Length: 317
Image 1 (spheres, helix red, strand yellow):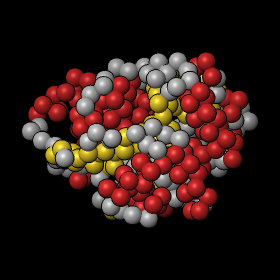
Image 2 (cartoon, helix red, strand yellow):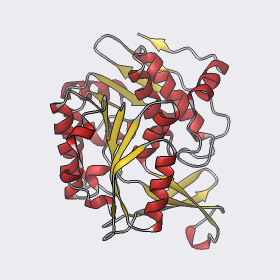
Image 3 (cartoon, rainbow, N blue to C red):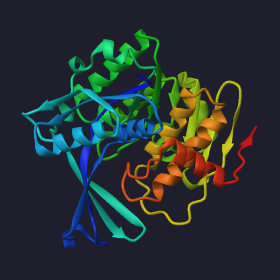
Image 4 (tube, rainbow, N blue to C red):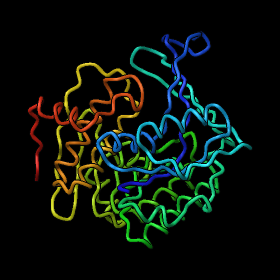
C-alpha cells in the first residue's frame, strides 16, 4: 500500500442551470470527497491506495462504495452504518463564474467514525498517511479518530501529509485553528493554500506561511497559489513553480485534491521537489477543465502527454 487516508465522501448534486438554487429543477449527481478525490487521483496514476471511513447503509452509501472501489481504491475498512445516513451536498452556480456549496452532513455515518475504526495493521502497510482538516471538524469522535491515526502512523514510522483544507462552515474559528495547527505540528509535509495560511497564521505571504509551518516542524511545505502556481520549501531548496495555463475554467472544485495527488505521486517516485510540485500544478490545472471532482483526474499517460505539451520552466532559488 502506498497511501491510506480517512474522511467523509458524499454525493454531490449539481444543477444544470445557473442561478439561485430555488429555481433549479434539473440536477446531476456525482461522488465527491476531498480524501477520496486524492486517493482516486493516485490510483489512476498507478499507486495503491486505501480509504477508511463510514457510509450509510443506504443506496447513496452503496453508490459511493461502488464508485470508489471501482476507481481502484481499497475500501476494506469502510463500514456501512445502518443507523445513520450518507452525507450529501448541493452546489449552486449563482453566476457563470461563481458558485457556493450547501452541506447536509450533520449526524452522517462518517461523522460517527471512532478510533476503533482504525486497524493498525492495515494502516501500517502504507508508506504515507494523508489527512485533511475536514475530518476532525465533523465531530468530536472524528477528531479523536484522526489523532489516533496520526499516533499509529508515528508509531509505525510513516510519513504524514497534511492538507488543511479549511472548511469555515464546519469550524469554530478558535478551536478549529488550534486543532489544525496541532495537526500541522505532527505532520511531515504540509500543503496549505493562501487562504488557509491566512486562517492559520494570519498572513497571505507564502514565504511567511512556510516559515510558520517549518517552525511547527514540517520537513516540506508546498503553498498552493491557484492560478499563480505554487511555492515550495524544504531544508535544501525553495522556489516557485509556474502554473499551467488554462484557457477556460469549467469547475475549480477538486483542483486542490488533484494537486495533492500530483505532489504525493512525485514524492512516492522520489522526484526532486520542484518536479513533484510541477506534477501537482499540472493535475490541478487539468481538473479545472472538467465538470466534477474526479472526472478530470488523469492517468499517468494523459498526465505525461499534457506536461510535455507545455513549455513551462519553474524558477528555483
